[in-house]
Image (cartoon, rainbow, N blue to C red):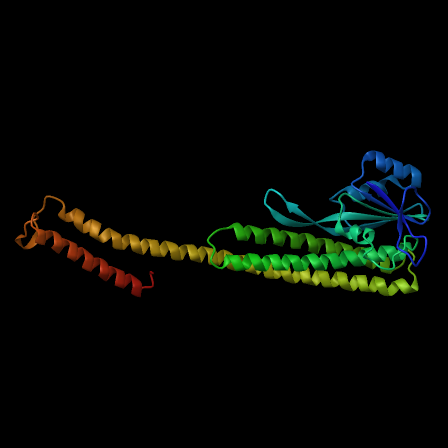
Length: 317
């Protein structure tokens, strides 16, 4: 999908147009090979610049070729896993291509980040101010990471709450998925930080005085996101270890109680089995009399109660 937007006035939001014009923003999402070839030939864009960001394993970096600059950064990607019926948090590359006449963003999937600009939720962005537009995108990326980190923290708290009396591993698997997401986020944020530090030097894109503060704000937000991800990851890792021990301990308690009950129930069975054999009852009792039956039953009950009290005092219940 290819969409084209252009700012005609600094007092108005960019509008969607049908053809490429100088100073326009070209947004490319999950393109076909024909669309890539069309953009490449129409705008004279380096072919690798259009294809590298579509590789989900591509790492954040900056590349310059023939007065064209490619900035690849990782952005949060959130989607619903229909099989597990749960929300997944991952990261995917976003490519920003800056040429003399055009500003291009390209991504393998539709994301909320670009939707902010398309829905006109970002103020004072202009397609012809390429440096500022780039920094605004980076700033929203850092903000998005912070927002989803809070979501992950909330989901981890919900999983922890349900784990208090749980004997199953379902909640632990949820925590494991969240911890994996935090690893993705931390790795991407650190890689993005390297890209931002390079941009701060002003060697790759021209930095204007009014954009310097914005770039510093972007770096600060990104550092804050890194710290939050590290903190949440440490807490989550410790929580998983703790609750794994709790689940094991809960299972041991259940097994201890069941074992105690089994011992108590086994005593009457053992006594009844013993006297049910062809043996002479003590004290000259006749096995066919009611007194012998109730006597044996009473002895079994007394012994069972005594064993139960003993096990109770030993904290076996």
